[in-house]
Image (spheres, one colour):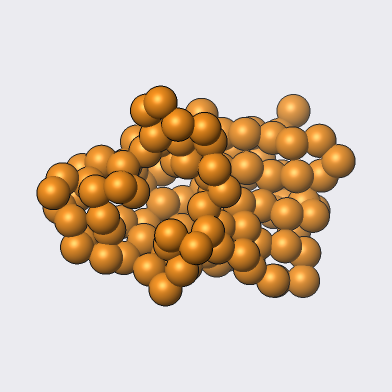
Length: 114
């Protein structure tokens, strides 16, 4: 069973930055895709950013230009750099990995105060 462990969440003021990391129990390059999703109270889980086998990235329109997803081969992690955070970015953020089957982390809370 693949394990994904997120870290880096917390409380930050609007305009601030946070960096989330997802550590995987297996080689991150063995997955066809990895990504970050988020779920705010009362809302559905949504894709925030994804990174695919060839390094292609995809972002939700709401975070384009503010968030950056990246992979670190040496640390075997996928990170999400979040800059210029807004109140509406408040949510639980989940790491996701796909390899025929979808794997999820436990989530990390990000709270942005206005």
